[in-house]
Length: 283
Picture (cartoon, one colour):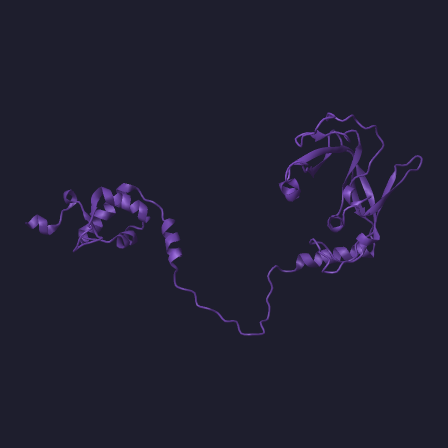
């Protein structure tokens, strides 16, 4: 068994005819050359999958032995390759699993596929001969699907209970009990910089997140403010009404005028029809 067929064991069967024509094959078609091949679907432990991921293409990862005895069910044993089993150093590109030695001997526990229809598909990047596909990475190339076989047997790969397996489980339990955050002692003095009270972009972000009230409520609030003072700048109105500045300007245009000349330049005041100041009433 090699790295290209990690959890696959083939059984003799007659290959089905290919559905592709003898002409040029499109990458949208599914290659059915191996549609009649029978395969096994095997669930392996995470530590095995981790080692297989780091194995080179075409490397032997293990060997499967099936023993048949008259009157009993076949017994399948799986032995990992010595290079896969050996302990790894931290610099060998671990994919997140254990770096210590893993169990070598395993056995298969078989299970049926019941009424399910399971198949195995593969996806391969295709490169054209008349374009610039040779310059593109495989992830950007069109891919072609191929049917590699039909699942006729399901199995689970279980390790033999020995000292190596117990050591592996002990490591997994210890990792699970380690806290995510740890307290570390600092040897030197850490320089802390005092943060600015409030940055301009934080104020702008908070202002943009203000909720819009009903226009009538905002208008009533404006009338109450202009009863106290005749002129307001936009900053004070935003602070008092707690409304987004863009939305507040839309409401202001309905009931107020904007002064562009001195002495009240850049200030807002009520339109004449809404002014009811006591001084004007006396006059």
